[in-house]
Image 1 (tube, rainbow, N blue to C red):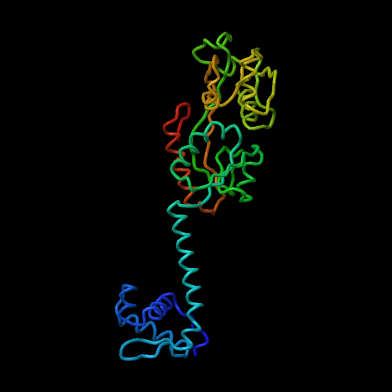
Image 2 (cartoon, one colour; image 1 turned 135 degrees about the vertical axis):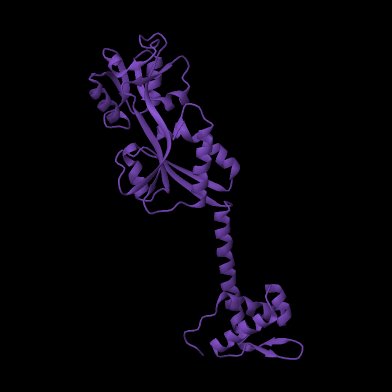
Length: 307
């Protein structure tokens, strides 16, 4: 016996076919190979194992005791290999799998409802798991591999993550129809001076961008309320507490009746929302498909600018 010999899958399949059918010709037909190929595979196994597996008669092949002892192991190996292959096929053909992604609550509310409805309708066997995390936890969730990818704007994107631009958003002013700036053709940052505004808390999400832009425009914002959620800013604006500064896509998606959305200019501030992945890690077929569906759905949506 060759101590380093390990049967190949082709040899095991030939062995099982001959064991079950007792004839080289029938085994060859089942395996879609020639009879001589089956004979060679069986002979290779016998030489490698140092034992005869079949006794040849004029009419059939009869398994030896060694073959009868080996058949259970061979069956188990081939069953496991076939199960592995079927599992891979299910994953690649999207018959099963999981999509696990990170997104901040605000972006999730804007982007995902329609996308998830469409994806689940197309691929009901795929489970979608959404990690709605705070902005400062967005990149750590990706780097820690708690999720496969994220949808957002990493504040400190660096060498550890890759980004694929998904859409472009810009900051806007949301106000009541009777607000002094509601009828202006264009609202500049400098025009905000003296007007009460509502925005997110310092250091949270888009607030650093707002503060930096206001400083660049030479205006001191009169912030009367700082919130954790843009939905709070919207109802405060609707209640007359002041205009809100927020991404235009969120304001448009919220569809708050009676409010006016005015793009802020001089300067116009845009941010790219991206698909964010850990550098060097590939995505599963289910995740790749989810991203493709998301791009297609966003392409049909209003209020977002694709990049």
